[in-house]
Image (cartoon, rainbow, N blue to C red; front, side, top):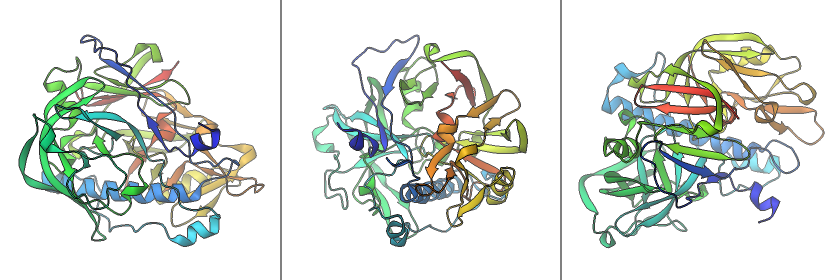
Length: 419
C-alpha cells in the first residue's frame, strides 16, 4: 500500500491475532494507525473536519433524544438541549478547498467483528460516544451498497425481536430496521443473545463511512435499542474478567484492551475520575485547560469520545482560550475552528485536579490553513454540541496522548502515561 493510499484511510483497522482469551487478564487487540485531519502537503483538511463536525453534532443530538426517552430530562446537563439537525457541509466548501469530498470521515476506530453461528464478518466503528450495535441487513438495505450485510436466515442462533430500531437525523433521513439477538464476537470475546439491529435503511452519509456499522461502548441509558450494549453483555456473561476496557491510540502500537488494562503500555499509576453515568456518556467533571502552564479555564465537564478526532468546547469558552494565544484568530466561524502562528504552537494540557495531561504539538496542530500561510489550525473547536453549557467533548486528539481506561465497574475514566 502506498503512503498516499495509507493517508486517506481515515480509520483504524483492528487486527485479530488469533490468540486466546486470558480469563485473568483480558484480551489485547492491536490497532493500526489512521490518518489525521492533515493533508499530504501539511495543510488542514477543512473538508474532512467539517464532515466530522457534522457527524459528531448529529450523533450526540440522537444520544440526547435517547436519553430523554430512557431516563428523562432530569439526566440532562445544565444547558443541554436537543439541537436542530445540522445539514451536511456545503459543496462551496469543497470548491474553496480545491479538493473533492473523500469517502471516509476520519471520525471512528474500525475493526472486524463477527455475528451469528456462521461468523458473518463486518468492519465496525468502535465508539465510546454511543451505545448501540447496528449493521446492514441482507434483505433490501436501502443505501447499503458496498457494505457487508447480516443474513439472519443463515445463523442458527439468530432470533427476531419485536419492535423497530430507528434513529432520526432531522432531515427526514433515518437509520432503521428490525431488531435481532445473536452471538456477537470481537477477537473471541463473545456476547451471546446480544441485541442489535440489522438496518434496512441508512442515512445518505453512510456511504462515506468505511465501516459497515457501529458498536457503541457507552452506557445503556443512551441506547436507542434500550438494551445492554455489547461489552456490558460480554462482562455479564463472564466473557471478560473485569468490567472495563482501555485504549492506547498512537502512531504505533495502538490497542483496544477488553476486560482490564495492559500494564505493558503505560507507566506509573492510573489516575481515575468519577463518571457522571446518569448522563449516559463517559463524562467527568472538575476539568481545567492550561496553555503554557497557565490555567485558562477551569471547573468544566468533559465527555471522552473515541468516535471523533477533534476536541470541542462551548464557543465562548474556546474563544477565551484562544485569546490567550498571541496571533490566534478565528478561521471558520461556522465550524468554530481557530488558527495560530505555526512557529509558536501552544502548549496545551488538561487536568482534572491531579496531573496535567499534555497534548503534543503534533496532535494539537491540524496543519496550515494553506501552504505558506504561517497560520495553523488547532484541534480544539468552539462548537455547541448541545451537551450542556459547561460540557466539552474530547476526541482522540486528546486520547492519543494518554492511556485511557473506561471502567463500568467503578464508573470512572482513568489516565496513565504512555510508555
